[in-house]
Image (cartoon, one colour):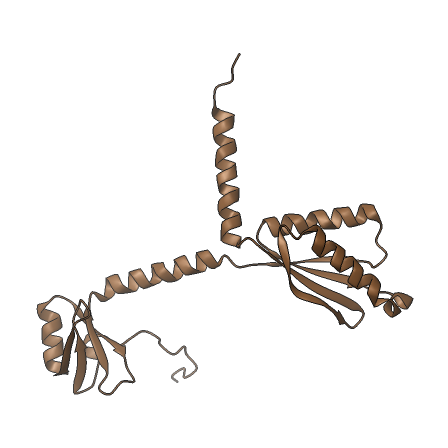
Length: 202
C-alpha cells in the first residue's frame, strides 16, 4: 500500500516533469521570453544545455526559467547553510536564585550570567520563592534589577520580570550575536596561539 503520509516534495518540477501545455518562460539571465509552448521551452533548454525549472507553479501559465539546476540547487543549499551558520542558534541558559541570596552566592551566579552573555547566549533568570517569601515579590524584583544593572554592558532585559506561580522570571539577551561571540573567541585563540609560538627573548 502506498504511504500517503510521506513528505510533500518541495522540489520544483523540472524538464519533462512539467506537464502543462504552455509556460511563461524566463531566460537564463532573467530576461522575459514570454509565453511559449512546453515543447518549445524544452527545446530551448536542450539547445542551451540547461534545465527548464518551474519557479512559480501557481501562476497561470506557470513561470519557468532556463537554468543549470544542479548548480542552482548547490548554491541554494550553500546559502541556506550560511544563513543557518549565521543564525548560530541562541541557547537559553537558566540560572536560579533565591530572593535572600548571600553576597558570595550572588557573585558566583552573576559570574555564570556574564559567561553566558559573553558567549552570545540568552539567560533566563528564575527567582524561586518559598513559603512566606511569596508575599514579598519586591525582593525578587530588586534582585533581578540589580543583576540586570550589573551585566548591562553585556546584555539587556529582553523580557521583564514577571511572576510565574511561585517563581519570578526575567530573560536577559546578549548584546552580541552568537556568531560574533564565536568569531571573537576564535580570533582571541588565534592571537594567543601566535603569542605562544613567538620566540622567547633570553
